[in-house]
Image 1: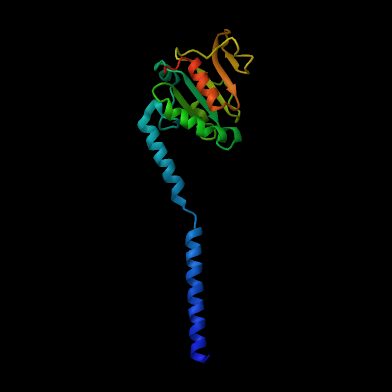
Image 2: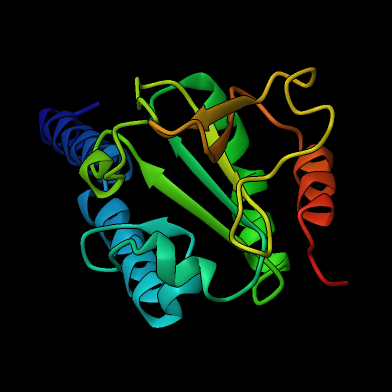
Length: 186
């Protein structure tokens, strides 16, 4: 190989290597806007759905008395998206919200960001996933088995039952059964 051919081969190899490096860097570059756009779309959808939106934020607000006025069963999940139980339940919660919209109210409050929207200190939000269960009459869900099923019955100073709380994981089937027991119309 001549000297000129060798120099041309080296330049071609460097050019090819440079192109490969540029392509690899482009493909591995983090897409900073994808997460933000997804959140913006979800927030816009939540604002359009009003009280039937899944996510409770400062933009959507949270008025429990208004939610009760719809005469629909309500499940309010309080939890941190960083907690494993909350993460594992999110697809089910989202699915319930979409599938039973106008038949039930399924809400989610991210306690890392919006804990202050849950105003009632009688239900201690401690970073663990929990669900507040309210029947279609606006009363705390209560069955004869509530305590046996592990539900916490929160009472006010006079001893009146004001909230039913389930701590931890609920299956999709379990949540549907609870909604039916709380008066969800078919």
